[in-house]
Each structure stands twice: as C-alpha cells, then as structure tokens.
Amino acid sequence: MLLIQRGLLGLMFIAELRLAYSLFHKKKPKQFNYIALLMLAATIITIIKTTPTHHNVLQYFIAPVVLIIWLEIFRIMYNWLKGKKEGAGILAAGFTISFCFSFLDTLIDNGVRLPTVIMEMENPYAVGTLVFLVTMSIHLAGNYSRTSRQLAAQERTAQEIELKRRLLEADNLRKTTELDEARKLQLSMLPGCDESLPGLDICFHMTTAVEVGGDYYDYRFEADNTFILTVGDATGHGMKAGVMTASMKSMFRAIGANRDIPAFFKQCTAIIKQMNMGNLFMALSVFRINRHHISFASAGMPPFFLLSKLDGEKHPFREVEEFRIKSPPLGAFSNFDYSMGEMEVKAGDILIIMSDGLPELFDESDQMLGYENIKEILKTYPGDSPEGVINHIKKAADLWRRTKEQDDDLTLVAVKIKESNETGQLRQGPPGCTGSAIKGGCV
Image (cartoon, rainbow, N blue to C red; front, side, top):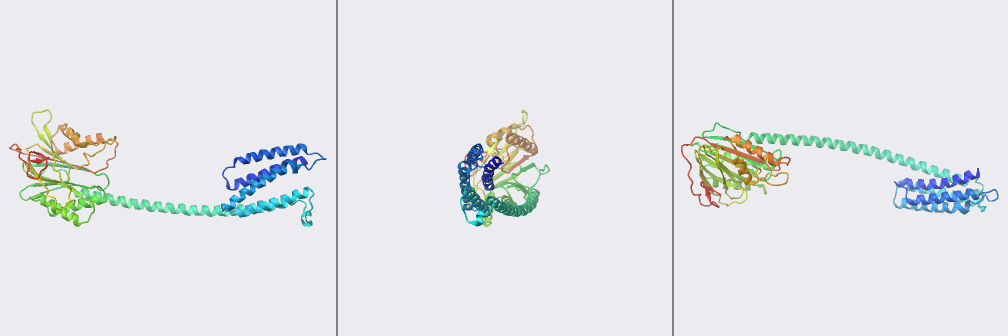
C-alpha cells in the first residue's frame, strides 16, 4: 500500500503541473516532458529504496522534484497575473493554498513541530486539495458563464452580419435594377440600323464595358435633306459618362451642327465647362453627308475609314483609307479652333466610324488591336452592307480578345452611300488640317 501511495504521489504532482499548463496554453512546453521524466525517475527510486526501516525516503528523491514543479507552477501563475488572464486570480489562489497545505503536510511527515491547530489536522494536504478543487469549480463556472456570454454575443453578431448582408443584397439589387434601367434608357435614346434613309444605308453597334456606357451616336436631317451624323465617346464609362452622353444628345438635338461644325464644337465646350463636370470630356465627330459630298470635323475622336468599291474584283472593296483630324475633346479648351475636312464619295462606298474601344481592345497577352489590324480586317470583308461589315468587325474583335475582358465601351457605325452618277474627285484639304489630305480629308 505504501508503494502505491509513493507512485500516485509523483503522478499527482505531474498532473497538477500539466493542469497549470493546459489552463492558458494551447500546447504543453518542452520542459514539461523533462520534469515528468525526472519525477518518474525519482518515484521509481523512492519505491525501490522504501523499506520498513527506511520508509521516509520521499524527502530525498521526490521532494526536490516537487519543489521544481511548484517553482514552475508559480512562474506560470506569475505570467497569468501579468497577462491579466480571465480567472487567473482565483486559479492562482487555489494553487497557492494547495501548495501551502502540501508544504505543511510535508513538514508534519518529517516530524517538524507546528502549532496545535495545524498538528491536529489528520491530513493537511487533503484540505489543500479540497480548496483547490473548490477554486477550480469557481473558475470553470466563470469560464462557462463567459463562454455562454461569448456565444450569445457571437449569435447576436451573426444575426447582425446576416441582417447587414441582406441589406447589402437588397441595396445591390436596387442599384443593379437602377443601372439596368439607366442602360435601357440610354439604349432607347440611340438609333438602330436603317436601310430606308434617302441615299444611305446605316447601321450602329455598341457594346458597353459596364451597365451604362460613355459612347454616343445620333443623326438628324436638315431641311435640304442633308444627313448629319455624330459619333462620340465620353472619357471613362459608367454613370458619369452616361450623364455626359445624355447631355451631348440634348445639345445635338437643340443646337445641331448646321453648316458650321467648329462653331457647334465651341458651343458644346462652353456648355460642358458650365456644367462643372471636372475632368470629364467628350470626344465627338460630326459628318454632314449631302449626296456624294461629306464634310466632317473631329474633336478628339479616333480615325475613321472609307471602304471604296471596285467592280469585277474578287473582293468588292478596292482599298481601305484612313482619315484623321488631330484635336482635343470637347470641354478641354475653350478657344481651340477646330478644323473641317471634306471628301467626295461614290455609290457603294462605306464609311466606318468607331470609338477607341476597338483599336484599344486588348488580347490575352495585353496587346492592343491597333489601327493597322483594323485595316486588314476591313480588307477581308467580302460583302457590301453596313450591318455585314459591322458583324465582320465584331467577329474579328472577339477572336482577338478571346477570354480577355472588355474594359472600354466599343461603338461601330457603318454608313453606305447609295445611288451615284459620278466619281468623287480628290481635293485639297482646308487650312487648319494637320498632315496631308486624302480626298480632302485631314490625316
């Protein structure tokens, strides 16, 4: 029985140290294994050395290890209190009381005379253990209470998060609906393909990068049946660009380009500046088409192209010509003098106008499509309809882009000239053009 008591005593102290580690540590430290091995060795030696005549050898082998254990426990308690761990106070009190009564028990076992009150205790260690168990119960009860409060708080937090998520979903749905309605409104303001216009076939296409685009196109007729076409591109895209395009439509309808396109550009610039839209500008091209004569002006728009037809060839188009006027967008400079270009066309010619979303379309290697590739795409078009050439360009653009996301609005306008009795002549471009003139246009 004595041997069993000696073995259990060492195990009990190791269990107390392990408990101290586990209360506020996720992993037991390495020194625990060394102390446990030391206690095991001391316990084995104590059991071996214990005899009827030498029954009190505990103090020689196990006692020093017990002292080491208690020093380690006190170090742990100090860290608890220093770190202000919840429940550290009650646990430190429990371990301290347990240590005191264990120490008294050891003194009594070794014949040390103590006050009568203490000496009358049959087993002080048992009293210390009982107090320790009470403090542990208090700690566990407090821990359970804290855990319950934390779970309740987490539940409230989860409910709040769920409520916020639902509110965000509702808000996103509302915004998506509003943007979709704005996109539908914007598209309803834009004309569609039309083959019934006098002397012209025309087709339009726009693919926006986001719900509301910044590209714009429109046309109108004057009293003398002159066809006025405008194609524009607001800087950026989204709602602000959509506001700019709506404003541009109002200006085009209210003021019109009439005979003097540069004067129209200056009026628009003045209005845009009055709107205080910051760094938001409007690139715009205007074309006046009267039978086979076209006058045009550009404010920051990309080049446009002319496909000239030649009968008897495998492909009906003889050449692809590029026209460019270098100029800033509307709203940038108040006193800029915009210039005009002129050109003569013949029946079967197709005018191709685009926003910069097409030439600046990126492929999967982040390479831009560019104007030279666009020329090659146009040269391979075998048909002679505006809608057909737009579909041809769209197909080539999709092959170029593949899986790369479109990051800018893309607009295409194709105008076919119908019925002609004469061939257009080359003419010198007007003053103010930069570069040379091709069929009267500035390049």
